[in-house]
Image: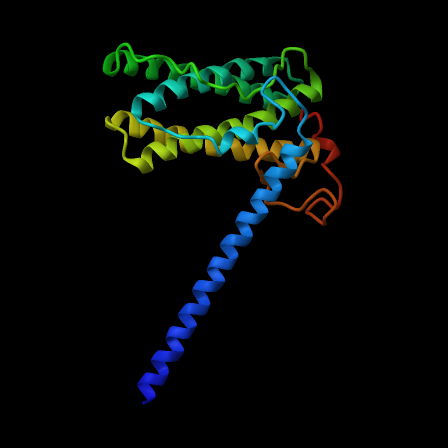
Length: 237
């Protein structure tokens, strides 16, 4: 009798725990949807479309290895073109970030194109690729840096999701591509959080495209007190 009672209590506890976990997951999903909706509503119309960069993040779908490579080539080419504009930035850290992206991704483009030519000759390029970055050529100073960070964060998120999808789906046919996808995922994940910190520290944007940085908001107590940024970091000499 006692064992039956204990079993009933354990079963009830397990059900309560499962319900709590489900409730937390639903709450997180609702919060994420609200953040994305707020960004899309506030985003200014650009050549990419009226919904801002978040509208592309949830549309990611990798059909196979060849599709991954062709779309990643186009994705990288856009990133390289945008990152090249950072050589006009007033911030040394932004110029260094831009140079790193240009060097790394140009090399990766060459690698991916060689794989496509070797394993998938005649495979068409990604004609349906939709640009995510706005035109930065007419921007300078803070406007250039802020626009680049706002756009490149979700741009990196798409590359991360594409790479993770290929790895999780098992559609990769060559070990080299699987290793490459893991490298892209991990490298761009690191860069994404670096850019989030820049956006927060320099521009006070704690609510960032497609997510929220894990530090207090501009009007919340933080390590430097309330306020959008540390003034000494604005030019980051």
